[in-house]
Length: 462
Image 1: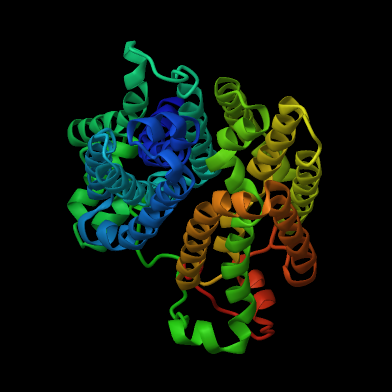
Image 2: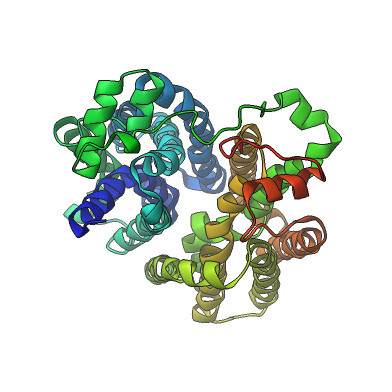
């Protein structure tokens, strides 16, 4: 494979991953800027409840975006999805900078829809334009872009002014919310004038062989008919995908169903959302210094980005089950330690940052990297949608309830709860999960369904 094509594939994949970057940025942008938004929108005594609502609005939009992505991509093409998420990002950004609660909330919801599309589209878009040898490397761009987007939003929060000011910095929070729209403009331009072809697989599915040939020539640099993606290639003629009702009710699919629901749920109850959405508020409540809290939040974001480079090392060395379960155990221990430290009077904000940072690093280089790889290997394709729904449903719940519960029972109790959920998840995972590393899809299917006579299975079925 030529170096020229490798560079071209990396650049193409990076432009595809800009939707993931938007997702990561939108996840983090309200974290450091909430005080300025609160002041501009006159939240006053309602700050906690309005912060909860607007933080939860984003993942609610992600639910909608993830649900429509597959239908839009199959009907109108992968590029059309890019145009849709870019247009929604522009609209959402413009609404978000208008200093009224209604427009701000609508902007967050629309940005959530764009984020859901970006996160859902990137994996299969990249897989369809990547040769086998590059798929793992190009797939890692998804994690890098998510971490970079999150870290960027945290770092841009550092210059935000503290208190009232007459300088131009009082508009800085609005500039921060324009970033997704600016990225959206770039996406429209690059896919309108340079990446003018959809994927070969999309054209093949539509029976447009000539367009598929041209797309292959653009991507690979030469037209080779053997590269044409047959939408049914690799599928067993004797395999019939089970109906959704069978997946929910048939006993042999119960383990798959548990994996699809429980693992994404545990992701939301391991404490990571507290750091992602509320680290500035947590550190401000400890230190009383909003500026220092923003700097420390930026440090956490940078540590997350650096941790993404550890992913490939850990994936090669450890199995999926090992990484998922022991990361839950370690995150549970860190949550318990943080809970204990928060009840110590005048405890150091820097030590608190270290604990939160370690929690984010453990999550990033293990659970975040492996969760959807494991689910993709282990469950039928229709149950992956159940997993996505589980993720965003519990994300909305935890994001909304976290600051409210902190005010009601104290932050230490909430982190004890996260610790308990993580440890229980570790125990469940060690007992119930099955290791999939180095197993073929047929072997994985047999283990998960307890079938001994299964000889044919579609590699694209789950």
